[in-house]
Image 1 (cartoon, rainbow, N blue to C red):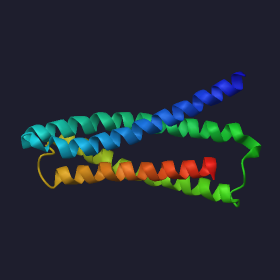
Image 2 (tube, one colour; image 1 turned 45 degrees about the vertical axis):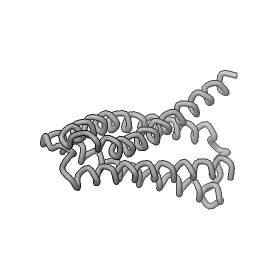
Image 3 (cartoon, helix red, strand yellow; image 1 turned 90 degrees about the vertical axis):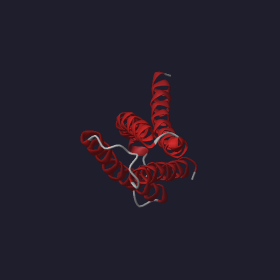
Image 4 (cartoon, rainbow, N blue to C red; image 1 turned 180 degrees about the horizontal axis):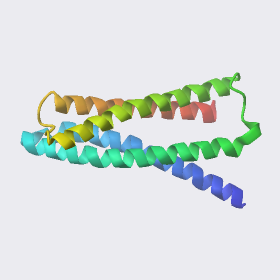
Length: 155
């Protein structure tokens, strides 16, 4: 019973962290579009503040996703199908997608850190468009990984 409960909690934490990643990216994309009615300087400050907060939550959530993902795979143990099986290929594709998301997100985070350090507002176009594109990209990559996860679970 304890093992089943801990497995449920691990899966719940995994999915909740994933929901935070996806929801935050969609929220920032929407904010980048709807807050344009503000003055450009105010829009820039709002976007940079929201992006900075999201990046902190993003990396905490990614850490939790990786830890719980490894825990999930460890719980399967020897019953884990080999990489030459269809399931193994799907898992490899999903893990490759996660690596792409990590690399993409590192670039996005470094841009936010650099903007914050330079005191540059997001109001300067095409910078606002770049951030909008980055958060759309994050959402699309995350949705792709979600699709791969569902494919793995329900094949």
